[in-house]
Amino acid sequence: MVNASISGDTTESGAARIGIALEEFSPELVILQLGGNDGLRGIPPGRMRDNLEKIITTSKDAGAAVVLLGIRIPPNYGQRYIEAFENVFRDVAVQLEVPWIEFFMDGVALNEDLMQSDGIHPNALAQPILLDNAWPIISKALAN
Image (cartoon, rainbow, N blue to C red; front, top):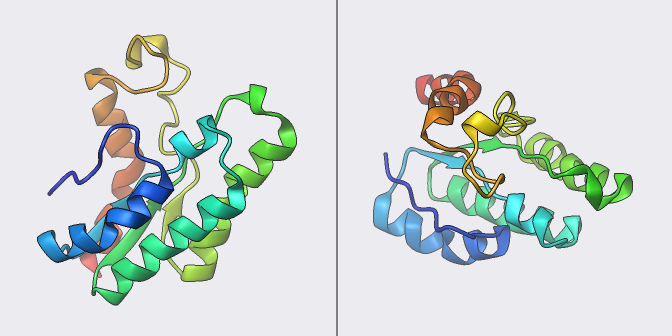
């Protein structure tokens, strides 16, 4: 397992780096969990969708399976933006036929004991819960 993420990554930076990461690591499975920083920066959901599509297509073309871990953003971004943002994950997963989960941080995001002091990122105590959230689709993808 290789963590090729960089703190602060957006889908755009992920799309720009995916080819190099695939070439360097030749993964069998790409676990894609990007988009939170896009939402916090108010990046248009259409642009996020294009970037996720590029990452997934490039990964599949390189022979890697992909699972997509969806994320949610705080309610202060407005209902219209939130719905468009969250629908991107479902729409991309369905269109490109990749397994996905709706909210990777379920059971973690609103629990102060499981979050770092910034209130955005999960802490070490949250890691087993995050694994439990993602493991069903990861294990299924690894078995295929």
